[in-house]
Amino acid sequence: MIFFSFRNLQQPRKVLLEQLGRVLPSDAEALPESLVLANTCDRQGAHVAAKLAEAADRHQGGGGLGGLGGGLGGLRVVFTAGPADVRAALTCLVARMQKYCNTQATATGPPSVKVALVGSDAFVNSLLRPYVDLFSTRPPDWQGYLRFYVIPLGEKESFEEFISA
Image (cartoon, rainbow, N blue to C red):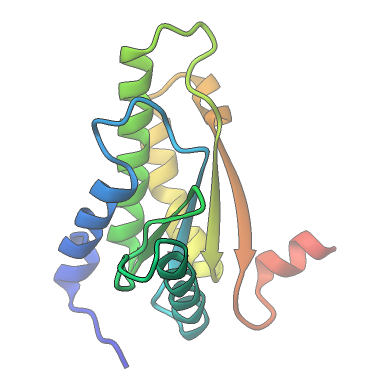
């Protein structure tokens, strides 16, 4: 069982910051087409994260990621372990989008990034507050630059029931 201290809820893990540096490098010219945020706090999320890491290691010839996430055939995976990690991942993505807008001369803005959320209702909710905080200071058209795809985990999640109705 994993226990987190209050400090860990407020600050992202160092390993996550290193992972974000690999998955969303600051020197990249283009934005990723897609990004997966997987919640490793619950058992099912940790299982999905482990399977994605194994597949990424196989795809990169076995010497790859050691379970830390990365590219899987162009798919970028970030393993989060709390609200601070989710906030850091979203902040990093928005910073990359802002850098793209500042360096690329396009009238339409950055391309849309598909963000898959793998986790429970609580995980999806942990993304909502930083999303509102970050996008409340941006123009309204920025909301269209991220497309969210929710992959619910857990038993009888309310979000899952709402979508299936």
